[in-house]
Each structure stands twice: as structure tokens, then as C-alpha cells.
Length: 440
Ligand code: ADP
Ligand code: MG
Image (cartoon, rainbow, N blue to C red; front, side, top):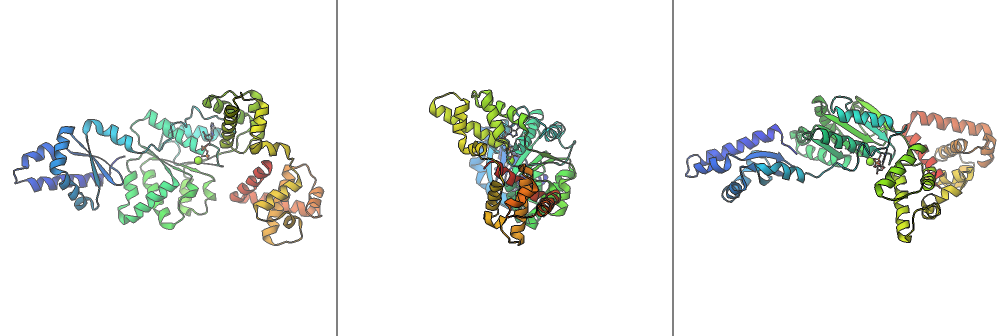
């Protein structure tokens, strides 16, 4: 937390006004003793944090002048603030502790497992943490849910705070960001957010895909971004998709997201999953045999949060049954999560069923004769998945789709591949469907 130069100027004016008020009164000596030593330490959204010489003087000051100060603040600041006073020796400790710790300390570089799926994101994050504002600005990290974006940006923040305790690192969810932007807009030309962020050295916005779509908020964010960037403040953005696939975000803002470096995180490969499971088991203090680790790593490939979920679940079962963790227990305990997947083979019928369900259609719709666009596309997606997930020939796939010709199947698959190349959101959708099939 901090204050802006405007805040400081207002504060000085306030003190000066008080001095003038007391000038020719018998109280003049008290001004030097009680008021003059007061210093503005920080301004939050609703409170001025003020330091004084010592708590004895502060207590007296509040009794004598507290009400007066409180009522004069709106005259100078144009709005009401709560006032909090602390001795100079304590204020940093007290106030800085009050600011909610947005950073999650448990996410560090040390406990981030690196593999081919995330090594680029890891390396660039580390570079940014080592030279904030310098290396890549902004750093834009994207990747699917549960793949470690939030972990990485927290690791950057924690690293910077550890190496440069004076640096002000602010992590905001895009929801908090939206709220702050709206507050800024409500203050019209005062650009509240820009002022508020002036003291920030590193700004991180998580899940930027949820940033409000309204023009005014985005405009405000645009200015905020520029003012930070111009001042070489590090900006880090996490998103579930790359900038160009954020259709709701204004073009000029989107292009700025690409000014620095854009890196993605992919799904972890098998070895990385094993390494992550081992580490998480150790962190959780539970003993998981290798064959169980292997079983989970083989069965779950969607994301890392899911891997963790399996361990937690397994551990709960073991404790409940008062048993050690072993393979059979894992199979039973995790049956609901991954069991079905292990037993149900991927067939054309399964794919058709899953795709139909996801598009709110029936299997018959997909295998039937209708050619309307809302059916044709899901049908082609299902064909594509059959081609990429099973060993079936195009002829066999054609048969599974109500006796269609193999060229129809080929054509459908090509269309889907092309669309996946050019449309990231669509590609994600297809990958998601694939995941549903795998986990069914
Ligand atoms: P996202 O923000 O991308 O949805 P998170 O950062 O919240 O994903 O990660 C989900 C969980 O997986 C967290 O508990 C995180 O610690 C863990 N995790 C993700 N990637 C890794 C990794 N490479 N090494 C260790 N843990 C990881
Ligand atoms: Mg996240």
C-alpha cells in the first residue's frame, strides 16, 4: 500500500489548513507538538494511514483534534476517509500486514516441477522474477485449467518479494481488477486505479479471460497498462488462451499483451506427471508406492489439479480404512474418478455418445441424415475424434456414422483440422471433448 503524489499534496494542504486555523489561537503550541509530526503513510480505498511520533502523543492528538481532522479530510480530499494512526516505529509493520496477502506463499519455483510441457514458461518466469520490468514486459502466460499458471505467477511474486523486499508486488484476479477499474471509472477523471497503481512495481493479473467486456473498463485497463508499462513496471498476465484468442478484449489492448513475451503451458507428459505426483505425495506427507504413482500417472492426463485430487482422495480413503496406500486400494478409491476410463475402451460409439451429449444432441442425430449446421459440425468433430483416437479405418468410421462414405469422413476430418489451426477456441473445444472421451 502506498499513496500518490496527489494524496501527498492533499495531505500537506490539510496540515497547512490546520496550522492556519490554529495560527492566532492559544492552541498554536499544540500544533507543533501534535499535528506537525503527523505523516501520511498510506492510502487505501477507504482509509488514510497516518503515523505520529509516539503513541502517547497520538492518543492526545486524537482526543483533541481527531474529530477536526476527520471532518476536514473531505474538504481537501473531496471524499470521506477513515483515519488510522500508528506510531512511526510500528506503522510499516501494522499497515503492511493489513493489506491482504494476495500472494500465495506455498507456490514457489522450488516446488514447481519442470518438464517439456512447461519449461519455457518456467524459464521465462524465472527471468522475469530476476529482472522485473526488464526482461519481458508484459509476460503473458496461457494454458488450460489446472496446468500451473497461478502457481507460476505466484512463484514470480514470491521470488521478487524475497529478493527485493521493498518492491511492491500486486496480484489481482481479473475480477478484482474489474472492480478496481469500475471504481476508477466511477471517479471519472481522477483515474483512481492509475494513481493507486503508481506505487506498484509488479502487477499480475490472473485469469484475464474473465476481465469485464465493457468498453469503459477495457479502456481504463488500457490506460493503466500503458502507464505501468511506460514506467517500466513489470506486468504479468495469465489466461486460459493466447491474446489473439481473447475476442472480447479490444484489439489495441490485445496487441499490447503481445508486446513482451507470450508463453504457453501444455499438459504434462507422463514423466512430469510422475515427478509431480511424487513431490505432492511428499508435500502431503503420505507414503505412496511406485506402482500407485504409476497407476495414477497413467490414468490421469488432464491436468495437475486432478492429479492432486487423486492423491487427496486416496489419502482420505487410506486414513478412513486405517490402511496403508497400495494398488488395490487405489483402484477402488479412485474408481469414480478414473476407474471407468480404465475399463471403457474408446470406440466410435463412445465418441459419438460423448460428443452428442456435449452438444446437447443425441447419438442418433450424429449418425442420422440431417445436415443442418448445428448437427454437421459436431458430426465432423466426432469423426475427427474417431480418426485420431481409434485405429478404425475411414470406411469403418463411415459405417459407424450411419453408413457414410469414407470420403465424407475424410472431408469432415480435414475441415476439423483446418478449423483447429485457425481457431484456437475451437481447438480447445475439440481437445476438451477428447478429454471427456478419455475420461469417460
Ligand atoms: P491454473 O492456474 O493453470 O489453473 P494452478 O496454478 O492453480 O493451475 O495449478 C493447479 C495445481 O497444480 C496447484 O496446486 C499447483 O501447485 C499444481 N501444479 C501445477 N503445475 C505444477 C508443477 N509444474 N509442479 C508442481 N505443481 C504444479
Ligand atoms: Mg489459475
